[in-house]
Image (cartoon, rainbow, N blue to C red; front, side, top):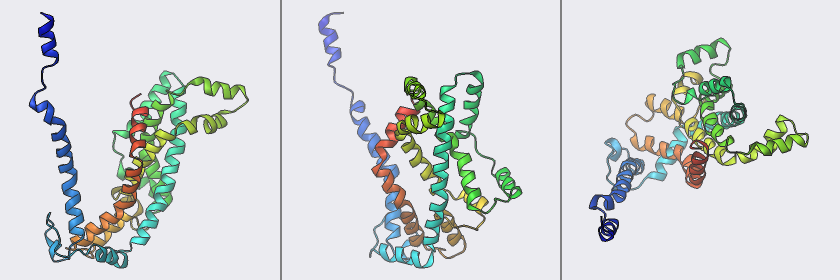
Length: 285
């Protein structure tokens, strides 16, 4: 084959599909994500009569602020917000602390037993928890319907996520850093607290955001474990909607969802780079 033919193939123009494919993918993603978000926002701004059949049309008169005010007065949203924080913050801290400690041990101990332990530890990523067994166990030990019981459930469910992310990240940290600290007389706790933990900030930031999203939006496990003894935002929305308070009031339901999603949406927007860096540095390596 001549040099001229090779050069012509090298500079051959790309096909039409290869040129429009990136644009098509972006538009498809915007369509799939944008339409539900648009319908939620415009429905939240409508009156009750206009919102009876949710659609994509704009409201004739925006009433978003009035709907949010009505949620605060009728929906007991303050108690739900406090309850969500009361459950989410200890759950996330517990999972991050014990999950990162376990990941450090699993990453540094190379043996068949540790390989089996690692497989068992991350099995929760793909295996669903047995809800009935969890509820019965909490009743037996007297923790059903309590915030502590809910925290333990979340810690057990999402511990696998932290171990999965952090173990891969720890393996990229040079062992010489730990050996130098041990030579200086540092014990395991001090090595972890002063050497390993500060280096885990990127991947732990990723895990924090993901677990906060899971816990903040959870209604399934909260419904069975808390049994109405403590309000969270998703559980409170389910209770008021099923009790008839928001029956056919789609404008209030969508306004509640916007208000409930806003805190973590803002956090996600400001910390999305940490999510990407944590995933690529922890799970991929």
